[in-house]
Image (tube, rainbow, N blue to C red):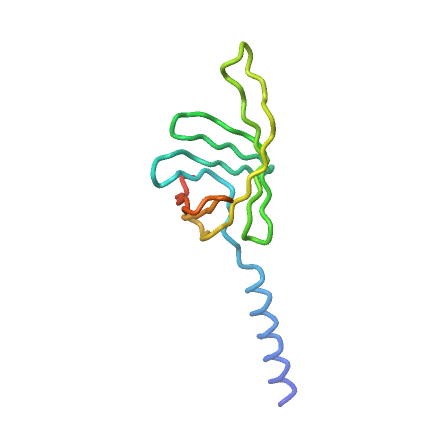
Length: 122
């Protein structure tokens, strides 16, 4: 009888561990609005990012998330003042994730002291 109880207890424990490991983590993918209406950041599933500021200037590039605490952006601004829109130099920017869940994202960009607050739009 003790062997059967131990077996059931082992199966129950294994089931709990498996279920806990399958719990979904919040996804950064989607569109995030700055809570100060200063712009948006859109993280795409293919690693692309689109950042639009409050003046509708757009910067595009790629992003990677490291250790669920740092986001590295490789961004390319465009020169819209020239005769043709030409990509300018690439810039690498890093942001520390201060808070992140399904509805809220807080970032502190390198060399800045203030925290930027975003809410999920979609």
